Amino acid sequence: MKVILLVNHVYAIPTINFLASKQMLQAIVMPDVVQPYNQQVETLAKANSIPYKRFAKKELNSAFKEWLIKQAPDIVLGYTFSYKIPEDLFSIPVFGFFNVHYSLLPAYMGPLPVFWQIKNGERESAGITIHKMDKEFDTGPVFRQQVVPISPGETQGLYSAKLSALTVTLIADFVDKISSDSPLQPASDSKKSYYSRPEPNDFTINWQNDGAEEIENLTNACNSEIGGAITTLNGQIIKIVEVTKANVTGVEPIPAPGTIVHSDINNGLYVACKGNEYLRINVLQMPEGVFSGNKLATMGLQAGAIFG
Image (cartoon, rainbow, N blue to C red):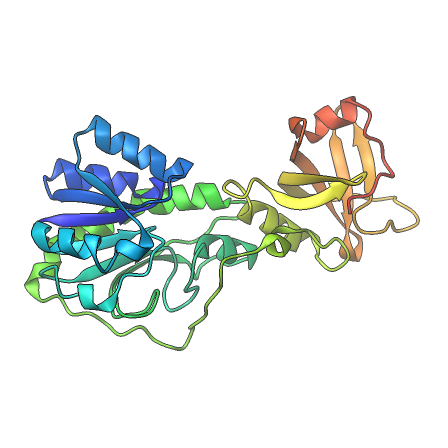
């Protein structure tokens, strides 16, 4: 079995290592735009003498197509690849083009599905899908799905890394069974949803409208790739990286959402949310660096300051 992987992120590395160990990995293909995550994949490929190529989006129906015909792979597998594959390329591999998606399709179609699932507070209805590509993004019949619950407090980075490791088992089953006419199942439309690429407003805390749980979900969804949920303090943009819900009593009158109600060296920072709920601010990222709430309390951040 000869497999070509379309990759744009380190989440594909466990699958790369597995396919290479089985001598199935024919080559890795990455977008032409170099960024830290696919640069690490390139470094891995060089270190292990794995053939790799980069193609621009405009080259998919020309240079990439010509290269792919010469390679004559059995399968092309997309895994975090950001470019839409032209439909007339699907017949080149023996078994076609497939894709790994980090949701239970057709729910959460679109880029960055893990961000949206954590932001929306999903727990049990999450996981991995391997599906055959068709002319649209994240559609096409499903080969296999695995439910992978999102644990309370799990961040985008931690959950994605867990999916990255678990995907290897699905890929092993996939390459074993794809040649035996294993049936593909049409994706049900009952839970179909699409989420576009999030914009800065989607990363921003709305202290007036969001409760403690919603802010905690957003913070976890923004950790690690986005760097934290966006807010302001004293007119300066900062990112909140980690929070936990907290019980705070005896605060009168009820403070406005976003107000720091407690700040000391031993216990750190506590901030009011909508509905008289509270969060403990564990880690923040500022232009000056990354700090714990305790550290900022030590440096003089006092109760009464308000996050914007």
